[in-house]
Length: 348
Image 1: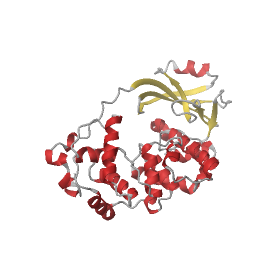
Image 2: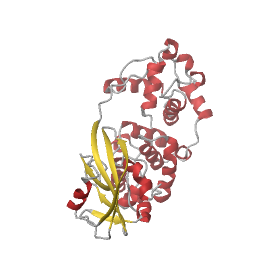
Image 3: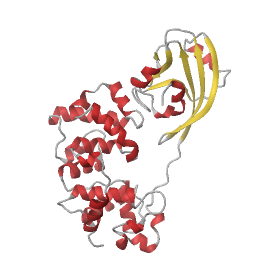
Image 4: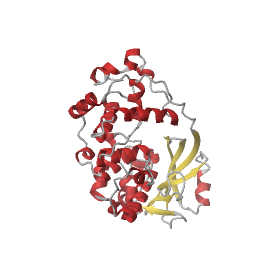
């Protein structure tokens, strides 16, 4: 395999998307973008990126941000452990490095929420350090380029692919090279459907294209079956607003707010009043079923049975608060798992 970097970089300089974290690739900007882009498409993440930076323009601001505001800025992106780790890391950076990320791969890699790929992206793009940044796009490109049937989720296979990536990396332009590979995988050597080989600067070298095997690559391990869990959700409204409760500080959706919820059960309309009474909620004037909903996490699928409930004015039960529609819009973070119910809560 001849050196791919000249053709790849020429293609990248002519075809790269104009993105704010490329226009200004400061370490904080690259770091934030890479954390946001985990599990999120670029087009979906960009408005959040701009809003987040407007509110928290530097690492000290991120470190000092109040938790509820931080969650609200992240609302809609999901995987909230990402932003919790982002803030934990920011506080360490302020304590140990004066509020600026150090130009040191191992030091960055040691921060919470930062793995090999993210550390490599920051160091190569922002600091010009010749290290790899191997994500799913890069693995797909190299799997096809070498017509390699290795299972890319296998650590040994990923290590071998990373070595190949580094064989081609030009020491003078590691950040551009890493971004070019990512961009090629995102725009040309695409994950869903046929790759756009006629647009690929590496088409003449691609062994999978020559062998007609590109659509079968890369190989991945079979996903584990998700656990199915029934839940009952009650959108309880009084003159004071909607009743919401905060989830535990550890576990799924830790610390976020949710409508009244019972896990492990799909209550009937006849069972619901007794469950509400057991929590100390009285004066039910109306209870109506609403369409069932589901939400898929990486390891679990929630199957939700929902109700709207209207009650008389009363104090909120322990662990709950009444929140107005305005407060739900501006203060309290309801995760995307409850997207099916947000419109009924006055949220868009």
